[in-house]
Length: 280
Length: 275
Image 1: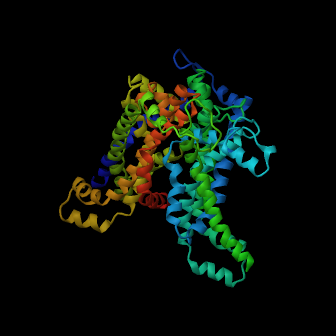
Image 2: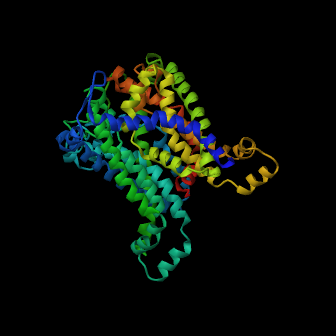
Image 3: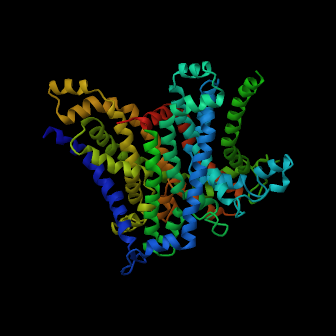
């Protein structure tokens, strides 16, 4: 009896969560099997919505864009964050640097997207910098050019996640026994070998947590795209989050939107599960 | 030797570059906000004649005072409610380990990685059917629910480290389950809970998707939802848009800067706590 009292402590949270998250999740799965405009009667269509998600070029493209964003959102913060953490461990004034790097976590992505759209505009600071170093040839409206827009969105996301990843990785780097570094060097390991043999295994768990956070952020990205490009130019930055939103609320294709959302959940789980298993 | 020296110079240079890139968007917002209203200034240039009055104009024309009060109300309702639900739940999952706690935790863990897009459409219909569409109450309830998985996860990580001897001792002294929680464990959880509160404040303030879906009137949204509306209002007036954005960001930044050390230490602890 006394062991069951735990349920009393967890039930309030569980019921709110069940009604406002789990129930909607189940309904999304249900909606995905129907054709429905959100108001009138719905018709059962079985797997048709899923077939559409996996064959309609626009929707397949959106999923592809999300996967590209996974690579950028994850790759850039980890490749820069790990060396930054290694330097920060010994740097003087590291505390101030850490605080600055975490600032993006405190601002809405909508504001960050807006500020970056100014920096990346045709007369923005990025292009002025490029022109100043003689790279006039590559200047462009980075978010308005269909060949660079997706990468530009990726950069904004990477900017937002870099500090968080650095902070997490710093803990892992800190925890590594200095004697291991010493031993590696005594065995004649170069910096790269030392990194491979000592640092990388030491921060495995932190890398797993970072990759989970960045992957989820990339696959579910909405705010940045909504405020910078609205999916354009053309469909160059259309992402599933934006498609779900516009299908459900503007085009009244609730069934299709739901199928896309379910595919997105499956995608998140498929990417996150192996990462977490690897990092254990 | 030279390689070593070069390596030593590369480190600080990397940090410097990262700091500059991190601050660039803030600097851009700030200098652009000082240009004459209605212009489209070139990136990162200091205006010849700084228009400090833009901040006052933006404040008045967007009624920023009302927006701040409204977002503040959302935060003031959502954050305590989330804590009130998540702290006992984290206690039960982390410390009491009642039969079935793994299943319950699994459900919350799913919520940790669940894209909001997967629930937003039915959530909209549900809130509409409850008659809470376009109300602060509906938005608050939805925000509490979507922040619960992380909050529960966080508090569970804290209570997983709580002392069993302490509980056993208190039980021997005749403390019931509620007293044990209320008088022994709750006071000890205060630091973890207050860091969580800071994070929840920032996330609620900065939340966008639910705010634009559930509330049409910008004056009842979260701060981030308000920003979306700013673009409609001043679409072409970039300096005023920048000034308005900074006014909306202003309340969170200082709080976060002051508290970041405690919070970041706690984030790390919660993220890395194993079973």
